[in-house]
Amino acid sequence: MRIQSAVARRARVLGACATVALFGAAGPVGVAAAAPPVPQTQCSLADPALAEVSGLVADGERWYVVNDGGSDLRVYVLARDCTLLDVIVDDADPFDVEDLARGRDGTFWLADVGDNRGARDTVAVHALRPGGGSAAESESGPGPGPGSGSGSGSVSTLYRMTYPDGAHDAEALLLDRSGTPHIITKSVTGASAIYRPAQRLRAPGPTPLEKVGDVPLSLTGTPGGPVAVGGSLMVTGAATSHDGRVVALRTYTDAYLYAVPADGDVVAALTGEGGSEPVRVPLPDEPQGEALAFEPDGTLVSMSEGSGTAVRTVPGAASLVTDAAPQQRGPGRSGDARPRDPASSDDDGGRGAAAEAGSRARDSESGSDGHEDGGAEGFPAGAVTVGALAAVAVAAGTVGILRRRRS
Image (cartoon, rainbow, N blue to C red; front, side):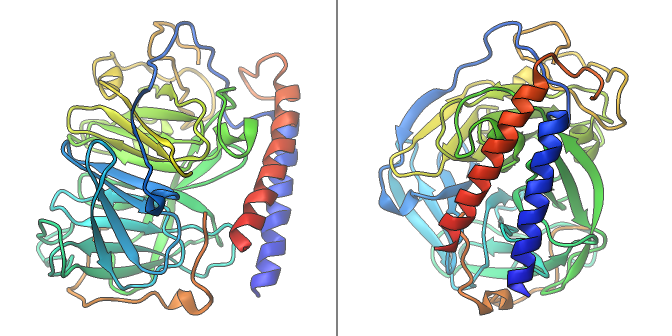
């Protein structure tokens, strides 16, 4: 079954590459009218334990990161100079952790959603409460139960989930203001899908997911990533600002910042139904950029897989969205939010997240080794050529990633 799924997954990848070659990317290409903000290097991840950073949250004093894959749940606590201060550990055995979010109560949510081979029957989120207790949900409403602090005695709760339309690879997790998890898939065509629980999460589940929207992305030409040009189409991480007014998605090469409507609807923000255009912030030359977070002051923090890679920041990134006047979507597909350049004035470019109290849970999906590392409107001239190059790059890069993560 796993072999057949892997073959089917490769077929889908190659088919998607053909689509990119013919039509370019899912959304129109934005042309930068002026230089966007330049990321600033803060320090380097020199500790060997941090060679596969895939998820990140920031609280203004420390950074909290997870590695791709792993045989237990580990959240690494870093100082602002990249020094490793502590490790929050729980012995639950995940399949493929790819992203990290944090609830308002301090509970960490680890996105166990990676599926490079398209072989998983379920995906999962792990609610990790440092210092003991559980991420229990009260009967009075959605959201995680109380939690605080860090240190030993951590306890996790496992929530398995199932897609309504077959397996998907994903590397990005968002929590909305109510604590509901939203999974954004990783697509080689730039058309990533958004899924969230169709009902209240229960431990261990599974809880059915529902598809609630699509996020179109375009080829950008920003250098970086393991799959050359095509890396600008693949969503590899996500983040929510501390005030909930901005959400961000990242690819291997760029970050996209979306204004959240007053009612907190992150789906409307991502699909463009909220009436605003996303702002694109290039993150060039990262070898495998997958981690993204906001500081409380709106600074964007970016990290990449790889030994000795730089931690970079974009001060005031959230204000590029919150200080801008809302811009209405132009004609085009429903839900097509077109990126704009932050320095340009032209447009160019419930399911509550917790459940009953539970003790430490082990994901039974780890029965294997349990590890995985990790002609449209506005179509620009020359995009077919770029699309063809992207298709070749994506196909080669995808095969390379599959081979690397199989070893």
